[in-house]
Image 1: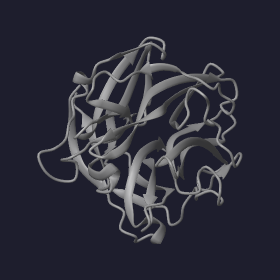
Image 2: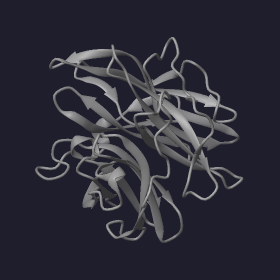
Image 3: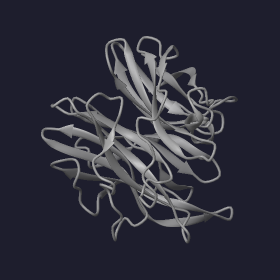
Length: 305
């Protein structure tokens, strides 16, 4: 693969409200029509608390912005809930009945640990407003995945909901700061709501420089599964990775084939992360974040033919 960077699309600046003064994190695209791509994003307020909104772009030229959500489509949870301190979307699917499901991460601050990340689910009839199906996580902490069961990416295939997500129970000390350690795991469900307590590890830490991963984004092309993900590298921040599988469970890492890296300067010169890939007519786009986990906005690249 070789990706041609096309540039920055959008940077949050508070113009749509104080709920979106910075960041445009974890682009999660959905094609609404032949002409429009909706990119769901998490925007942050001045306290760094995230809420979910979207940016609609021209499918032929994603740098052309058509609309930006004026209010959150999913707000933070009630005080005391697992998502009271921020929500971050990672997967959107449309069901055969026309309803949309938004899988997301809830942020909960800790006292003896920095934070806990668990996963929730919200549903919508129109794609403009989403309602939680419950106030508790659909991926609750478990004995084997104690602190992190997050970044869910879901595909619905042959009557089965397939889930790739980030899981972990440990922290590591890096430059005097506790940092999370986690793998990418896999689970299946008949309803997409109830899942097991322990997933199968499908992407594991490969060396001493890695300590975790960002949201997996999975495509299926004929009989080949492709996974795009972010790798947390000590002293470097995020870089992008790539893996392939014949069954979606057993994966071969091919990070060297990803074909895109940080730029020499600019908004994605220090970090590149949270990639999402989609085909639009005869083009293949990658939406992604750059420096500071999306504080510098989100942009896109196009696969070279």
